Figure 1: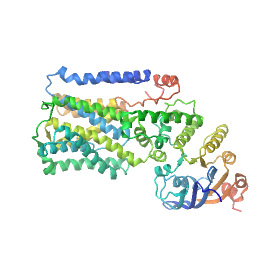
Figure 2 (figure 1 turned 120 degrees about the horizontal axis):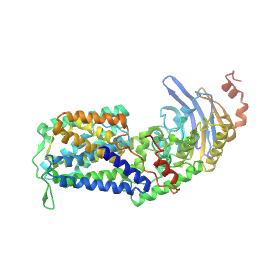
Figure 3 (figure 1 turned 180 degrees about the vertical axis):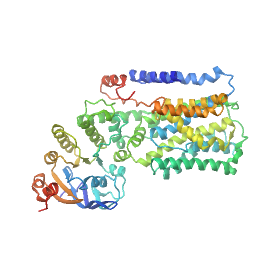
Length: 348
Length: 258
């Protein structure tokens, strides 16, 4: 794991030196290709789910990162939107004969609509209160999933729809969904990366730092928090629909408070604000929760918690801390580049 | 007839619990002026600033910017009407670079929709490029051209942080700029050059209202001075009149009025 972190840091440094981000792009490209081919090359795994789950949890990390990492809002009920995506897909597939391709946008749309409805009153409160209200929302969705049997199938969940096909190729085994999940992760990573360095991303960062100064600079704080909430939830809605399609089952147990907690842990572990970081966080979570637990049983939860504690104590900014990309000014940046190479802009 | 005031404050009262921070203030600021708002500590200057800039929204009386009432408007809507401000205890965005701090001030001027932001369309690059060159000009204008635009504000000397905050405030192209103790903690040389900056801000067509304790700055820069004491307006006039006003002297030195 240290090797991964070290190489990511190396890539960051490289991209800063070249100034164009080309090094980083090439490096990320290599990692993406390796990640994409890994399940086919390694093959024969007892857990074909694990690769798809890594991509899905990477997407969850990327989505929640918009809310927590970019805008600084603590959301303890994020997986509610994952649940909404899952149940929307299951209902549409089971009762209305929609295919996955028609349902993905619908799941995303409903997750965004739900986040707007929940966010509108909730985002007016600050800090601790927001955490409590989102926690409550996550709980409501979980219990609704258990009890609203008419649309959720209750404890047993929903299953038994036809598998999706694409150009005559059926998606049956979990590994069939892997390219889809990976594509979703890639799109989520690229889009949120774009948002981060835009007017929207700066507004979020300013709110995270100082709401009063942000408002005085003309930023409608509540509105921009709502945007962060909506643009974070959309990825959970999409990932949730894919997850349901892959598992061929949605049931309440996938959307417990624990799941929302782990989503937050993934972001904190990886590095708030850092895309590479939260993807790594999601991958690590799946490795520990699914692969390692086959050998260690419930001990894997302890191992994940210990890792989280260790990171919080030793690397409080996460495994791959976020370093802002320098803006492109016309002025020669030689001095700035020198500063960065000696690490003059921040701590160790 | 006098031109319409850029700012008019009428019978404004601000209360916090049982404390009457501002107790009925009335004054106007004409466009193009530099007006000083002075008074001993606790006189209500910052509370009045907070009411004008929409941070404190519960007040009695009426505040208008260019004739438009600010009643009920939150801070970002007040900013949209052309008001911008700095803070007594500098409030820069600590995790954003020097350039990004000023770019946040450009927020309302940059035209990007969601797709531009997400996919960095040609329009995104056009808008960001134009904003960045405005930021460069602003940094130069406030005397920070020597700064590394990627530096974090926490690493800057105090005076530079003040100037950076002014640059951020100017980035939104305000009509009225409120400066809350811009010369606080500055030495004589620094505060003199700050005074020059304030005057050059006015030359850009921006009206300035400033709270300041440094009397050299107030007397050398301001066209008019408004004096508060215990939340009340006790004097108003040219700096030279204020300096000799017995009530003002009494307020500052603690003697009986008159």
